[in-house]
Length: 188
Image (cartoon, rainbow, N blue to C red; front, side, top):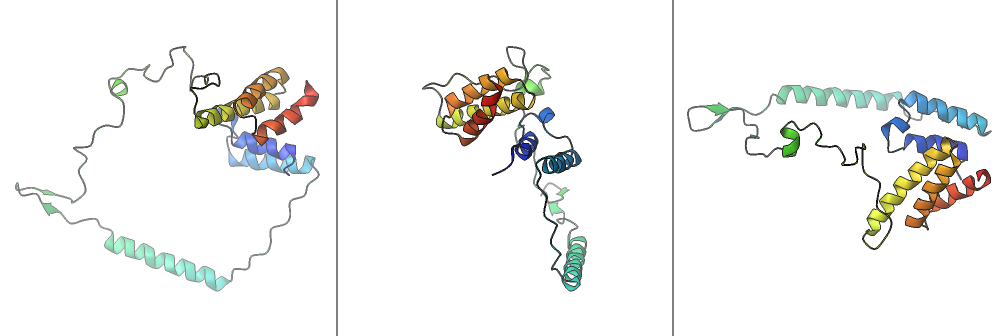
């Protein structure tokens, strides 16, 4: 069982929205250490390394030989005669590959990724119903659960309860929904 303090730190690190995540590894590590201290848990000391010095030296020697081989033989393919008097470097041509960007983006349309309602990002998922596949329901439940966790972390209990109710409607058997529901109950 993961203590709730540590769970909150980890879930913030796994947040979908980049602004809701830890911005650096140092922030994440500091928050985990603080959560461990608050929870009364002590991280076990790192065990002594059992690797010998000989193994490390052997690995470095193998790496040096491999890098040397790359530099000696890694000069690329030889020029190839194209038959029209010219040569090519032998690399595949990308001339026949279609662009992977949509035409509306290539045309310079700045609003190509904007939603019709003026919002940013993915639109709110539809209400659960017969049109949603099991995968759609699961993804929508994950989104609602993430929203509920953000509201819970921000101590916005009504918003957390609303998002949690949506997640429960989409995926009532999800143990994460049940866990957050149990933690939220005292605050309502």
